[in-house]
Structure formats: structure tokens, C-alpha cells
Length: 57
Image (cartoon, rainbow, N blue to C red):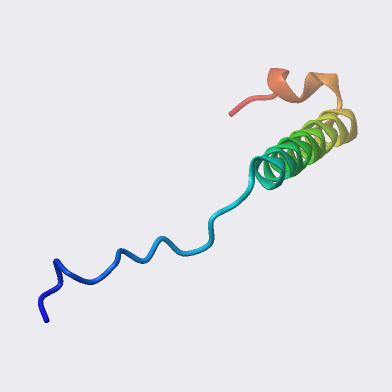
């Protein structure tokens, strides 16, 4: 048999509801990651102080 006659394997096919849930989960993870980045940046800026950019290189 040739490869042309065999059915194409599509893997897992999600329902529209499952696709919406995956999208919501991805958005929630992106927001959580973005929030962590902002928190780490703010903590770094506050710990180093405002004059960190005025120091000699």
C-alpha cells in the first residue's frame, strides 16, 4: 500500500469549548508571567535605589 491511500493522522481534535478553555488558560499564564516580571523589576529597582543610574561606569 502506498502512503496516499492511508488516512491522515490528525492527532487529538479539540472541541470549540476545549479550544476556548485552552485560550483562557494561555492568557491567564501570560498574565501571571508578565506580573512576575513586573514584580521582579520593581523589587530590583527599589532594592538598588533611584541613584543606580547616576553611578560611574
